Amino acid sequence: MKSIENIGIRLSAVKVKMAEKLGAEYEGSQISGNDMVKIRSELIGIHAEALSGDPGTAIDKMKIKAKEIGVILISSGYTLESALENTKKARQAFWDFFEEEVNQERLSASALLQAASIVDQVLDASIISISECYIASFKENAAAADDAALQIKENKMLIEELSAPVVQTVLEGTLLVPFIGRIDASRMEAIQMNVLSSCSENNAEYIILDFSGQTEDVDAFTFHLLDQLVKSLKLIGTEPRFAGFSPGAARKIVEQGLVNDVKTFGSFRQAMYDLFSEKGISFAELAK
Figure 1 (tube, rainbow, N blue to C red):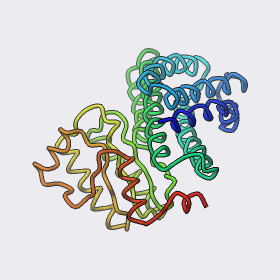
Figure 2: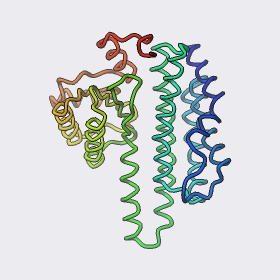
Figure 3: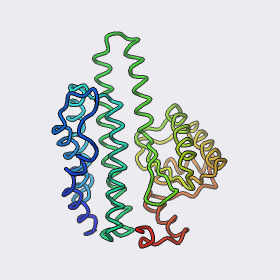
Figure 4: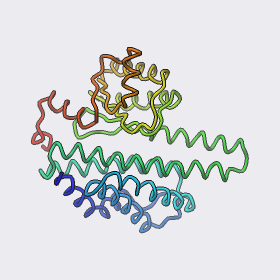
């Protein structure tokens, strides 16, 4: 546990540098470069607190802070598209930070996976809170019902894309899809296209579908679409693996006889450990 605390301290030490690297300004925003760096630095700092302290407390803090920042972004003309696109860059920046820690031999296999899981949970909380701010704003400020419906629909598509981002893990050829929030049939159809496209573009050998971020159980039809996704992934040469199903979701899978031939794990961490073991890769080799 000490190594997790230490990496949180090191992340806090580089939060300003990481915020600057993510970029200071975005077109269409009235927020100054210094203010943008300050905002990003503060959010990175909360991720660091989750590692060096209590993750649950940090997640609660992130929910509050992300809503405050969502209001600032909206009032400053910062688009939802830019806000959500920035979360993609932030998630990759955290992975880059972890990789550097591995390269410097300051991070063990156990600590890496645990740290990545904690950071993902905090980042997911920020995505949900900021997205909720924008949706509330669209509903309140739309001039006409038709315009409001169109605007909400367009931005809902952006949120759906970020509700299951495809992330490159530290293991080459292995992608991660952390499912965030409620997954229904409509969102699952959009996720199918995004996942298949990403796997094809990256020539992915494995993809871990992590459901630990779900807020509700998945319905029967969504499971059917998930079964279709599994079959499609196998056709393009990518082996899917599941992680983080709730007890209720796991029971439904068994009852319906779906995706029985897919390896399933309790967490993303366990799924990664299995892949390391299966490939015979040590962290010394991974750091090269």
